[in-house]
Amino acid sequence: MKIGICSDHAGFDYKNRLISYLLGKGFEVLNFGTNSSDSCDYPDFAHLLANAVETGEADCGIALCGTGNGMAMTLNQHRGIRAGLAWNTSLASLAKEHNNANVLVLPARFISYRMAVSCVRAWLDASFEGGRHQRRIDKIPLS
Ligand code: RB5
Image (tube, rainbow, N blue to C red):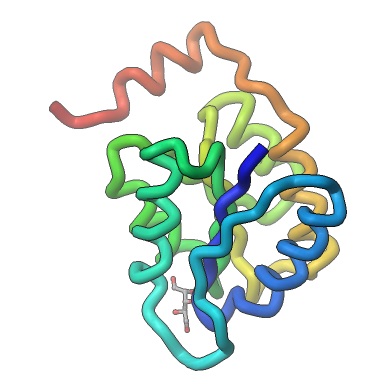
């Protein structure tokens, strides 16, 4: 599985550590930046990740910024993206089970790195439940 990942400066450290973790678990990882801890603008990287997931270059994605809100707001502007924000493992699992989130967003300044890894694992291990949740997802896009 190819996992795209991006962050701004606030998520840079966790992104690097998650890349190592995921590579160690045998995933292919596509890094869409940022590539330093210098202050930067999260949409510049969120759009790159979103485009990769929408085109199929990446199977899914992980995005990190300080609160997670900027990444989630930007990613969810894309028609093919369902970005779910999670700060514990229940939220991470439910983002997949109920919302079929194809991007997991993590608030790097508000969770430990250990929790970030746990959220990623919970989200990757979870399965979309379909049924009434698919009906609700179908109602999300504006015409
Ligand atoms: C950066 O200071 C911070 O604003 C950003 O990481 C994020 O929290 C925005 O939503």
